[in-house]
Amino acid sequence: MSTNTKIAVGGVAVGLLLLIWLPWWVTLLIVLGVPAAAYLTLDPSQRRRLRNRGRRQIGR
Image (tube, rainbow, N blue to C red; front, side, top):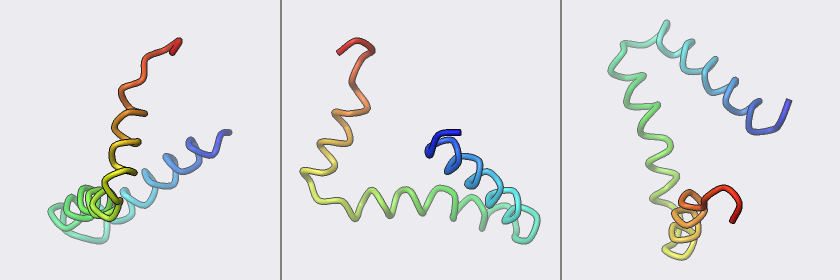
């Protein structure tokens, strides 16, 4: 299993546990807020590199 797959599986597991223990709106805030906060902590050059990486096409 690749590293990204392991991270995705762990994220889903944590999300399900949070959904069981916390109200749904708190879980939604955590699930959406953590990646948004991580993105906002990047400096402009890192954000640009991340956006460009997401726009790459297959074969380029």
